[in-house]
Image 1 (cartoon, one colour):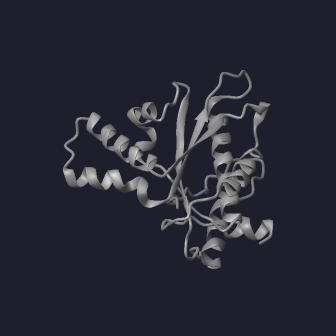
Image 2 (cartoon, rainbow, N blue to C red):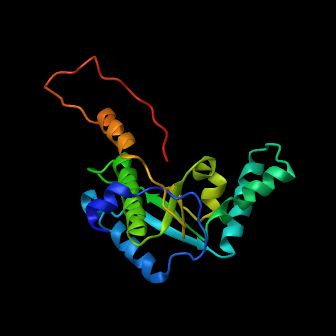
Image 3 (tube, rainbow, N blue to C red):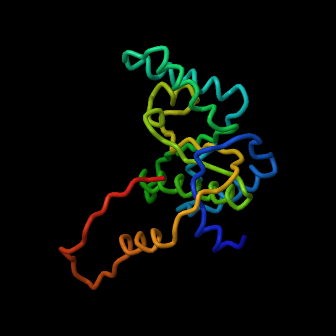
Length: 203
């Protein structure tokens, strides 16, 4: 697989199984993340690796977070929530580390953390690994943030589920072509009132 094929074909893999990435494969992925565009060289991101029994602890943390909201949580709902981190043999928590800088605002640092996370995903795909970037309510929950040991200036960017997949999903070329038409346009020096805003769901 060459670089262009990797960039054009990467997809999310919702169904993952053991084995998890090896230390050598993780090293490749983390090195890829270091190539993210990074204004002022702040490195405004870090990664937490969760595997084995630690996934069960993460599930317990999710349940604790929901109960802290004083919401009625049935045993069945708690059980489903507790099992979510078990959908993959490994989870990497991508964290944005926001720093005070006169030329690099917070939004730019969060975007940089997202770029590093995408590079990590590309590093996984290039090695034949399956990966799924998940967010949701737990991503922004203060109880989860505290339980993961994040500081006040840090925030979760996403939970990257990693493992082995039997077969990568395929996205048709026709769909990709229609997507291209919806995201690219020319600007001729004046604002156009004919630009349509399309809302699309993420993977």
